[in-house]
Length: 352
Ligand SMILES: [Zn+2]
Figure 1: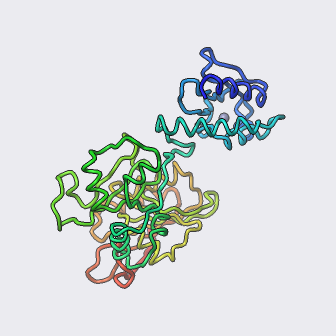
Figure 2: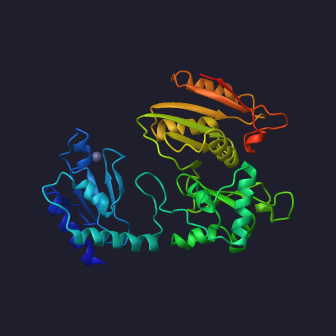
Figure 3: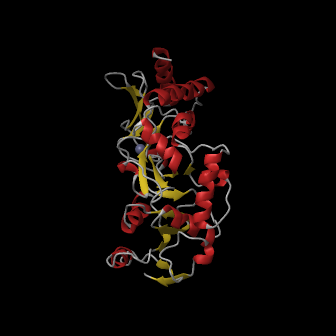
């Protein structure tokens, strides 16, 4: 590590990219962006800058022409960048890069990856009495018996302390005693950028908690100041093909829609909860940030939705000629989809 490592990395970059050049302070090496070249837009002026890590900061590559061409320089990122090079990266440097990243990951907590996610992952939860209470709480809400493993797959967080510890995050954004209460009485849902956890109180209305935890839902920021993101059930989609996007208000609404109405279909379907945000902002997220092209939106509204919401969505989607549907639960006495299947009567109409 240290001086040795970035000399080796610099040398390696010069071997892989003959045009490479150092900046004045020798903190970065600049190369012609290979990603621009691959996109038919050859770069002759070294727009990609690669941070060499001599200051202990993460190794980042960044193209000044295209903000999509950037990320953490991992071994696989270097292999990807060097794909068209005459030379292959040395196995030794690949190992050294991963080792370096592991170290800085622990020290700096810099966790943002190329797709704007924090490098934090949900962790398996052991079968303890408390976790079993949490599992049953979720299962009861949606009326389906799911294992802890399955819920973890859906980014359900059983213990914040466990999650932080096993992701080497040492800094808490709430007081330790608050953290203990969150772990004891709340069940969590990690958001899509891994920057925060949406927590549902299991004792709301039954037990006195400190003022800051007295609401039904509480948010825990894993990364201070991070955009909170949305709760989105992990699925796989080809973003250039047709994708159905299902949006509901709360985390239990969307989980129930996923399992009870859409048969837990994880292929080319996306399921998101808007949480405290608006449907319109999440629709914009999928169109502008994710870049979905061929998409149908399904909005699962609460029956007490504010009257301006649906016209606003229509105004947003109609000019774009995007197909969309409004779904609501018409079962007597029910107000949303966050219930077991026998309490649902799904009605659908086309919005645009
Ligand atoms: Zn580029």
